[in-house]
Image (cartoon, rainbow, N blue to C red):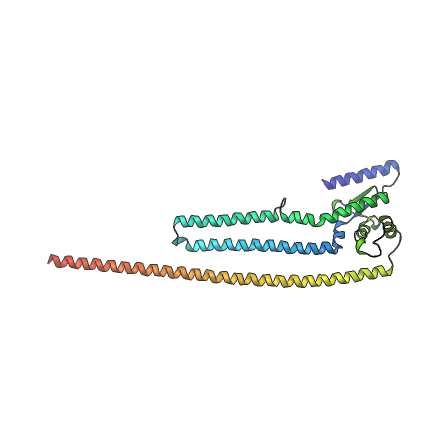
Length: 284
């Protein structure tokens, strides 16, 4: 629907050009590019990814627990009364309901925390971009300014791309040279002159620092991933050991019950034999 609306606006723009002979001024911003250049957003996104990984880890943990409980029930079913079996099945059903509720809470496509938090992650920046675009549109007298992901753009010249201008305005508070400049001055500089070599040098230094932070983050992520892997492996071994112990215990209990039945049968056979011999002696 949004793309249809955008195409309709472009059609109106073309009609305007045809009838008024005055070309419309159109620009666009690339929100994905802007977000990718903001360090705060990158850090927040990385933290959000870790949070999502923790959610998935919790789901995996609960799933493994349910599978273990089911396996335990199947192993013990022959020894349990119908009432105990029913209780165990209800406990497992409750665990499954809780797991499904947790999944829905975190990953529901309409109201899950994943969707809402991901939206809130970008919303403050999107609001700032919206305000900056309003100023640019009024000052530079744009007829339309689109967001790239919402428009079907088959071709556009770089002069229509306002992303770098918007990004510079967003970073103004962190840039000593731009901090006290108003929007009109930023626009004039961005449109009318090339940045000096010092600006390029600072950008490269910033990119180098960002790369160093990225490497540090990647190393930390790998370390945490390895720790989680080791924890999962230790948990798996512990569960396997517990399962083996339970099976051994059940085996010993079955063998004890079997020995007890055999003993009882032997005692009963001996008793019957003694009774027969007693009756035989009385008959004589």
